[in-house]
Length: 259
Image (tube, rainbow, N blue to C red; front, side, top):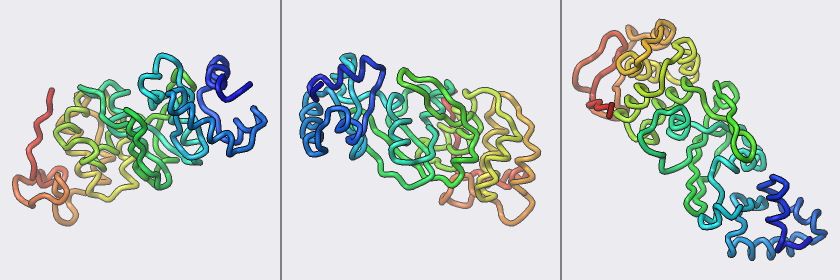
């Protein structure tokens, strides 16, 4: 066994990633020799490194990319970095069938600050949240294993919390229309970790654009529209326009969903 034939050896076993330590033990090499050999494989587009000390191995069908699809290695990457995570925001919306086009970046919510990564055509963007462990998620199978993805309710809640990462409120409204029935009680639970303003924006958007008409009384209690001053729908925008008293929201931006 040599570094030269390592990619084909591991891929034949259905294994797509390995650490420097694992490779050194397998080939009986010191870590310096492993790094030199793996750099050679990277130049040949046989391998890539999503994090220092972790390598991914590329089958022939993706060697023109010089990297695996994000779905194939993100779970291993998060395990290597010791991060709780889930795929979220626009990437999760696409998984749930609510995206007109593939997101330009693969968006991941993590429990610790994590640096963004651009690896060939794969762009990983990370968003820190204190609610990762409590968020509702589901597990989906990938060609290399499994992946944690936010539920529909968690996805919509996160999009409202990160409107810039979601390409704006018109895009959020489009996703809410396309994502299918939502559980109102779960929306209320997901909103508990956010300020009251989040529940107001979330409730207003879901009430106006969800096709499923979910029960929103729990979310409305969380929003408490009768308390304090109204919340601007677009954060940081002007406090002008019509106020929706049902949700305590200042409609200070134009919402134009694509569907």
